[in-house]
Image 1 (cartoon, rainbow, N blue to C red):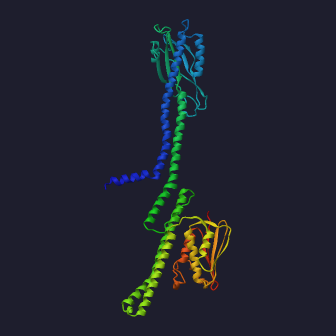
Image 2: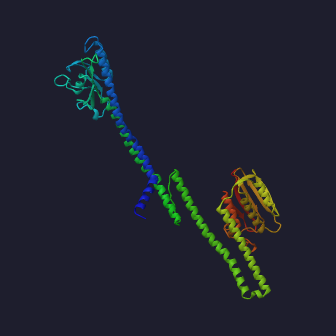
Image 3: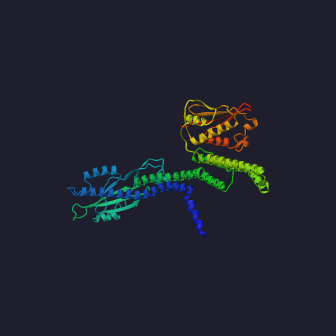
Length: 497
């Protein structure tokens, strides 16, 4: 493997990480205002072009008005009145020049409203605290005429002229448009209409737009950075710790816990992960304990079978009485081993998977199971009959408890199955009339492989299976027993319909 391959793999992992994707999203939030600034530049050029076309249209219209006058008058009253109104409304300066470039009529300088407090667009000579109306000064040349300006030269020559110059007392440029005055398209030029307009209003508008976009970009950058840091701390880092913890568990380490707080999805995931880790630790402890118990329980019958087989091999088989006794012992131990294996498989099936829960007529099931045992009577005191549970597993619970009661009850003694309950669930008690359970044994009756009836075929797994099934259904188990007074094993079963 070359050195470039691991580097490329690291880059791919980094690009696929949540942190990188969050950074890309935040970068996009910053790029949008920056793109807006670039668009503002295009918008500025379009505005300036529109301003130039507007000034050109005005100059063309005024030139046509002068040319249509019945007498050759470069400043007729109709023109002067309308030109002053247009100049005031459109914020332009209109001059009418004669053939020598001298001014025959002038509306006066353009008045510009200065509405920004930013010093960048203020005139150099204007105090920010001074008035907000400034005249856009276009001083005439030293000789008093405009004949030398290229746009005027073009207009007096019969062609429209355009030009742009920096303003003398303000920021920005002024647009100069000159249109020839010619009554007859083939006749001589009598003068020119000279219109000027400052670009300050356009620059002011764009200045505000750009400032707003810059502030938005900086704000987006700041907010995006803070959001990226926040998300890295609250998402990326916890997920990295979760990944590391999962790797440690996969490597066989036990007792791993994240212990992350928070009420968000990450916090819930961390708590579920800790619960899963604890469940795995408990499962491993259960497997270790079960292996030890199985080894202990199997060791005695296996040793007995081996001893009997060795004795038979060494000559006991020649004695018919000894041979029958030893073969009987071997068969009894083999049956006990078979019963242990069957019970272990049943316990493993209960603890490894949950059977489907379906609507169940619990009363009918209790009465059907109790009918299999002589002397068993059902006393029903529950308000409801139905529950949602796994029928076969609930039947196993009742069967194991009734088997247990029948084994320890005197012949012909009554066995009572009492069921009480409400809308939340059932409380079932199986009571026998046996010898009861000592105080020392009551705490151990639910343990695997604990039994006081080993001589009669008890495996010590029946009550362990009962507890596993009931707890898998969300219920509880217990026992009330005193030595010499019989035993009462009970369990609860939630309805959950």
